[in-house]
Length: 177
Image 1 (tube, rainbow, N blue to C red):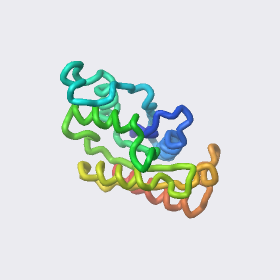
Image 2: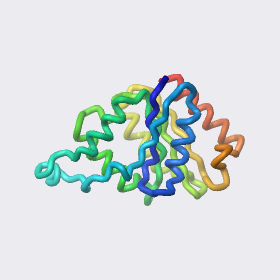
Image 3: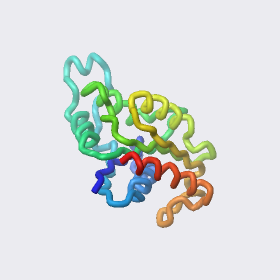
Image 4: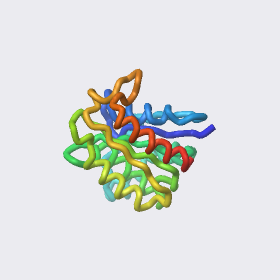
């Protein structure tokens, strides 16, 4: 049984990206899904000065341990002003200080969604460009525009074209597991 870590890269309690990440992970057959909440890994804003005085927070090591023990990672990115949310960026900064290889070269599936027609495509591109640079695996990516029109909490992705694209990306991720 594969262990899949999934999370929405947002601190919103009602995160549609957490919903999408969880949905994607649950589509993986013969897997155990661990859905992380970034609110469980709150740390001071990263700075070299804070690190020198306080060291790396225990929450960063805890987050990295979850990644290390997984077989695959699914992240769905929320977009704030065209980029990562502050919550994700801060965790990313801290975990990058614990070890050189941030994502342990695990198979990954990168997603993004928003209520708008662009589907957080800007942050997905930024995330893909950054994360794929360090990962030797092919990393599929998928953007779901207009979340509230294209996603049903019981049925999943209801737009047939988008569902077909999602499934193709999901299948590529599963092949890497």
